[in-house]
Length: 345
Image 1 (spheres, one colour):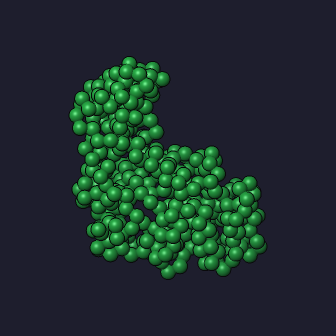
Image 2: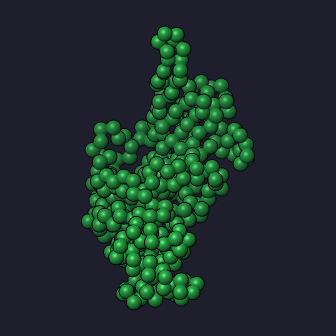
Image 3: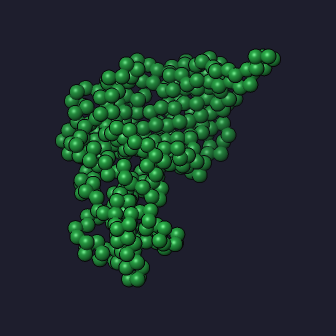
């Protein structure tokens, strides 16, 4: 797993004079003014790419200095498929420090680090982090088959909000958390053909290997960081967020037969009556669909039934479809890959 994106800012007044001047000289400004009086209504600042030969971060300066981009692209050789250093270690503080140091070095100024106390007002403020995992399947065809199932995962926290080619999004406008799944191989081919791309160059062998990767990205937004101080977002906490979001889609056990599933559901409940009610809910979802079944139950009973179904090993992909989806076995057997050597093995 890796941290694939960070958005972070700091108020300009906490920069020294040289850093503040350099920041305000970055990028174009869009100005709205009254043509009769010449009074400026508002002024916005465009994002500017701060780059070296192959590494880059986007920067914008207004009342705050904003940095955003993939920390993996400025660490090591800039490969953002698996990342390296603090990106691969899910070390959020380390990622922010590397981004700050990179931008400061390219501008020739000193920017504050992240060694301030948690409650210090001059500290950097994180508002977005993408936590990403790469699952290795058997082929690009298997990756696309998995995506076809994931497109139908609905209900609870999941709302399929966009679909584009080999990509599916859940709740992409959410300020709390949202998800994204896509085929990494086709994405790398797109990047290598894009005249605007100037990052790490992936070779033909890399792209062919990446055809086996199902990439799952969890975006934690500003509302998540309002509730959780970013310096407490440890690697274990970020891993748990990713697992809780994506593995709940898949489910935890392999279900062989209907009788086996019925027994699991009844055993997962506190009482036999609740178990049988949950199994009845499952049968109704199969026959009537998710939406019709939900209307039949009270809110309390509906969510209790879903809790029992998940405890029995069903994932949200199963519950949405009303059947144990074929994605289960392949994804359960898939390896969470962290480097190219593992993928080639």
